Amino acid sequence: MENAVGAAVVLVLCAVLSLTSFIPPDWQRWVHILTIAALVFALLDALVLIPRRYRYYRYTLTSSCIVVEQGHWWKRRQVYPLSRILYCETRQGPILSWFNLFTVRAATIVDSRSIGPLSKAEADRFEKHIREYAE
Image (cartoon, rainbow, N blue to C red; front, side, top):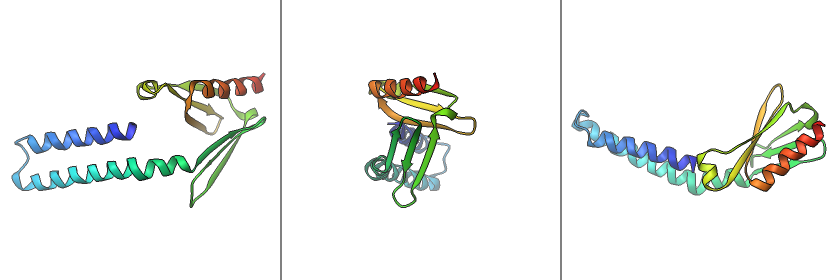
């Protein structure tokens, strides 16, 4: 949804530019090319890139750490020990609230990591597990 909103903003900007009179007529062609490129990229992103990104993204909450794995060709695995986590917060922006989803952010001294979008029950379980470990 965030990418769709960004693509919509670019398309509206291109439409405004193509309808205004201060753009020279020979530049109109480039505005149309930019509009088509934005549409193609938005479709590519929605149909190919986003599903691939989520297909190769996993997180595991163990008794002592959070393990985040991502990537298909270039794999990356990050381990965050629960003993090093300083705080944990649950966020919900306007787009996530529309779908009743949440993002949980856990932070250490060096790094912070967002995990989500998660359902309300999963976000609560995640936050509760980190809180119980801290006690």
